[in-house]
Image (cartoon, rainbow, N blue to C red; front, side, top):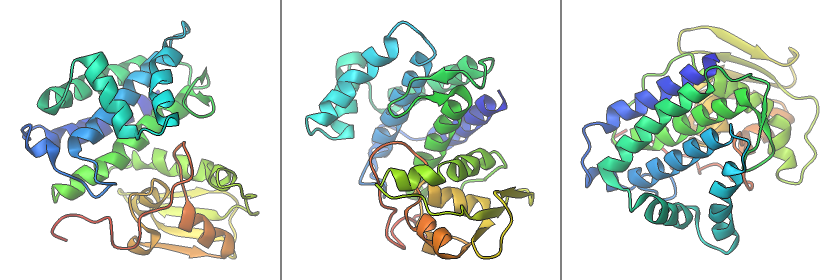
Length: 270
């Protein structure tokens, strides 16, 4: 699957800016809920392993994630749950050693998905999904959490057209965004027309003037992945359905999350 190599490229782009950082620098707090860079890497590492285990049919996936979600159900935070896993399962893996383990596991995860049937159904923390959607979700999460790392380091990411995968995921989760909030998805779904980093034009849904979202693909991906508020990107939402969607869009699984307030998520020094 091409998406497996897109995930690999996304992981390598993040790994490249992390390579010079020492243990102290990896403890810098980001603008995402105060997570440190180290905690971001722990999160990505844990769920990349989970994505590998989902390819097995021996119960390994459930055995791996059940303790994590049991801890969350008991009131512990995601960070506390993953820290327990890092301590108990990986001997207190932290710092540069965690960074290196994450990077190596990302490569193995990409390898594991290269030749999988894209339509194969796989278990996940939320609803089952296709293998193509699974590895796209891993790219999305790497890109989204990578944003707070690029931001706190004051670096501007060099975007590529692989961001189209994240945009597609964002469009595909239009209904999910509303159902997850206990709302009926408003119809019709807006027409989406985006400009990729290369200048390519990508379109989804039936063309219409009254309900549409237009602008940069990167800005759209930032909104649906909730790394930026829609007020902070170059998007134009026309129509009530489009406006409501862009106000609450969520392309990732889990409980309903609200996007960051305008101006909160930004690159250091900007």
